[in-house]
Length: 488
Image (tube, rainbow, N blue to C red; front, side, top):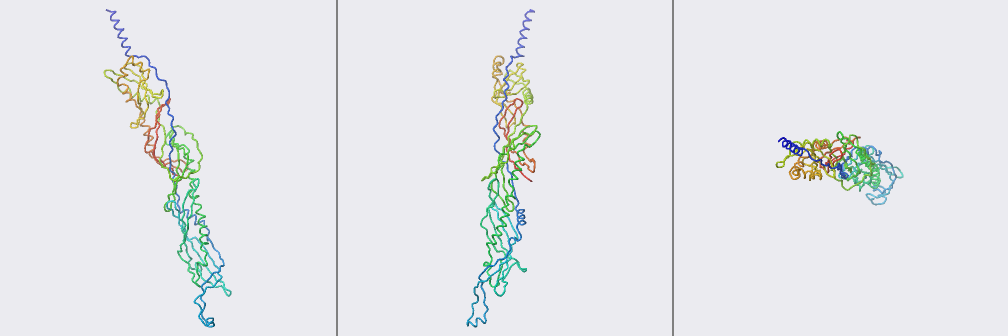
């Protein structure tokens, strides 16, 4: 009887031992899954530039000579002369004509003064309107005496005033240089000069093309300085230098704009303001680093001229990561929260571990039931955009795990345990992504030397995931708009 009891005890111990232990299952080797990321797509950052015309007008008024022109010259002109009726008429026996044409030597004095200047722009057309005061004096020279014929603007009389309208088109030449292409000018008398003495025709003694030439020379010389006043390249150089440097958005988060080229499109002015937009092509990226990343700082290339400015929308790549040790603790908490049932069978997970092998994610599950030991399932890491979590698709057991379970616990192979684990095993990235969204949703960041980035991110789209030797990483693309303000 005692022998039978001993035999039953030994058999029971063997059965219990078989339920509480399991042959060791070979773990898949650690092979980090690192994606080779393509370069960030080309983005376009707007650099608005505005120039007020009134300061330029004041500068021109201050710079033009006073007077624009003055001098005297002798001319021979034909005048209508009214001969006096009297002795000569009596001697001839007939009346003289009411007036006769006769050549007369005339001295012409003139003085030109710029009285006012107005600059306006509409689209790419810049129009200068110059009012010029004209003082004229004439004296006829005859053998007996010099007869003062007429004048305006002398001896207290108001000068004549002429308005010159000078239209032109603003165009880009090379390397962001602005040029004003003049068109045909027009002239209008605002206050004519009436030289009535001896019926002198002003047009016969006044060389108006000469006057127009003097005005054109003075005004054009100053308007030729418009590219200097517009100062596109200095603004671009300042923005380029500052955006070539990494900027810390938050602790350990560095915004790297990485500019590549600059282009400028057409002028779009209105009234007294000339405006344009310089577009900076760049490949922005957010890097996670305790220290400032070291970046190449290319020199500013020539500014290209394009027919139409590209869309100012931009995209920026960055990476959110969770250390593997922290991911393991999250998995353990999730997977050990409750037992897993399949029919009459039950499985209990005490720990979870994640790493990569063979191009897939490996979930190492430490079981206490139906046996004490580890099994390994493989899956494709995918990002659940709706839940902001890293999940695992196409989950299956490793070959070693399948072989061992087929011999000892095949219900784990064919039951719902695998799908239940796949559904539960998620690593939440919501906190990391929410923090990034919040920091970038309204971006107003000084970039140094009067340069400020303004804009915001409208959406964040995950692009790929990988598993390094130390962390789970989600590569994300943020999309939005950014404007670069310079000197505001």
